[in-house]
Image (cartoon, rainbow, N blue to C red; front, side, top):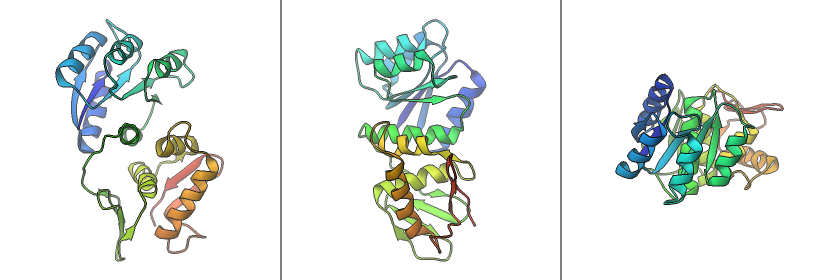
Length: 224
């Protein structure tokens, strides 16, 4: 699975490349808009991570040209979530956006969610934290000293996002967007999904030790 990173901040692009490679993706890079189009044509990536503020040709123009020829999934990077350029990018056909600054692991979760919605799958190894191992191919979670537990695809997706961001709060809005897409879920559906996952994962679901609720914000994986 190949991802094109288009980002003129060299330090940030290196961090993103390292994180995505560690997650099992092949990464190609471009540092301006014109180079992005050339690399896209030559390398045929499965997904593009596209900064909006680029030299030579801005991100909106890059998105427009790509969308005129193909449906390659695109995730926009922006410094402001309410930026008019983000709205324009989504209207041009971008699939998602991430607001800077962000956790690189959050981007990995967004990448996987966009690829799933696009019907692209990635066969990857188990995802591990201190006491949990998620087998993404078998949809099983293993806890230290206990038998594996089967998960539904949606439960596995939620746990994957929380594990990728272990110790960091993931907002309710982000989890809804990653799990169902921007218009596919709501807070009630997320609460029900968390409830089902806790019943499978927690020794005492009424007093969770893995998936903690941060009132008014979201959820965090805080292992015992």
